[in-house]
Image 1 (cartoon, rainbow, N blue to C red):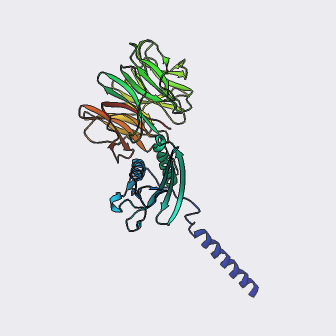
Image 2: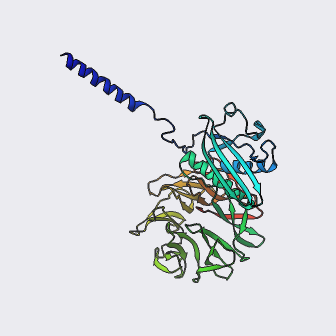
Image 3: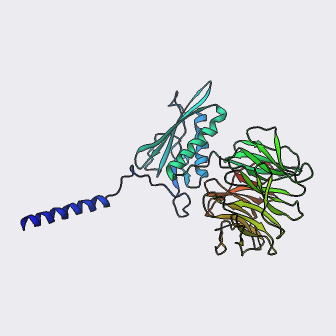
Length: 433
């Protein structure tokens, strides 16, 4: 009897020990908890980016250290989940009481200038844990300065969210100056701008290839709206992909880059055609069922969404590329146009005409889905395109007489104008790289 009681007691103690072990929280260092970048109710993370110090003269503030810290701070803020503590709150010094200032993370940067260029050493300090959780070193020419800062920014975003940042990506758009429209490229902050086309004519619908190495677009410079492709590692050669009589419009590249869907009017009616990446027709996808334009692929390559006026007014339709079954998915709004499928989820953003104003909406690719408004202000919002991480949308917004490029988080927050370039800007597209 005594032995049985002792055994039962030991068994009970053992079970209590096991339960206690299971209920004990896992230390933060054992499992990284990532922040949800898309949560609308989340508090923004407070960052401080004090002025970088010159490693050879650490006690002497330099204008260069202030300027590069400002670039990095703007790139971090661009992601929509980070707020930056103004440097005047702590005089830009790397020695401050960050806890009392309410800071969550601090970037501590040093640099060395020499004849070859610049070297950056950057560390990310977790204030609550009082520990450096990441450090990176970059070396390059002074012309590569922004690229190095943007790369570190993307590492920081990945450390916080589990997904890479988008600071190193590019944005393409069409700018009208005088009587010509040309395609330009820029970084996310608009610090470096590059002209891609020089046709001195009308250009529309630029589209990056999935690998980000080339840009396709439709140009009228020969008299017919033809489709061209320019490799972005050079500035001299442009290759024609489709010069069929009539429309050669707005290619949607398949996720693997091997095919594209193009609007052609070779048979009189604007229809969708499946082509290979050399411009050869594989198959006609729609056949005289209204005007069919603006295709966009699903991330898995199994479906497309597109615009058709087969029901009388432009609406969004979904096509299963395996069966060719087509369903209408928008039923609210006078017109629904310019769909763009998220690269990370089953969600489509598009421009919807509501009460005389084009607003941005998102909808799941399902006939029973309900659309959600992204914008509500009384200005036209057109040609939306997703960010590579699926958290933001870039679009063209009518701003007075001109159009300007804006971005917004997919939950409708943090709408802002991105650039201040001369001219009117339309057809923005975001690259993955």
